[in-house]
Amino acid sequence: QVQVVESGGGLVQPGGSLRLSCAASGSFLSVGVMRWYRQAPGKERELVASINSGGSTGYTDSAKGRFTISRDNAKNTAYLQMISLSPEDTAVYSCAALIRASLSTASEYYWGQGTQVTVSS
Image 1 (spheres, rainbow, N blue to C red):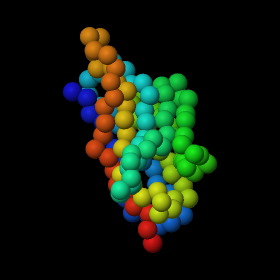
Image 2: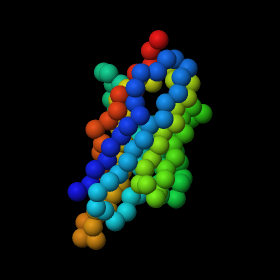
Image 3: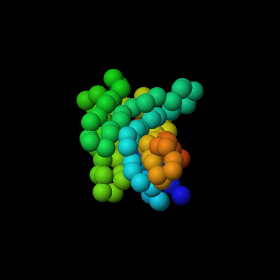
Image 4: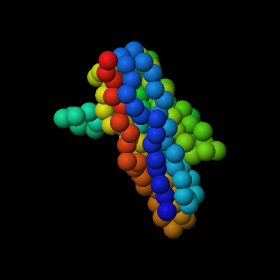
């Protein structure tokens, strides 16, 4: 069984920083691209950042310069370092990992439950 679990969310003041983690665990063959999404109240979910197994990254415009995605392939974990946070960054942050569970299955995205990030004074 494959699990994806996010952690690291919380309450932070404007201008503050947080580091989120996304860990894949269980029985699987490989982890490909890992993506961070966020969904603010009343808004659609948006892709924030992504990283493939080779370390190539991509960011949405709102994340560029403030967020950094990285990963530790040995730990099957991706991180999202966020700085200069503003109230507009308040959202549930979720991770999706493209995982191939076995030789007989194709890769598919597994999602975590999400972690709340609240930026407020």
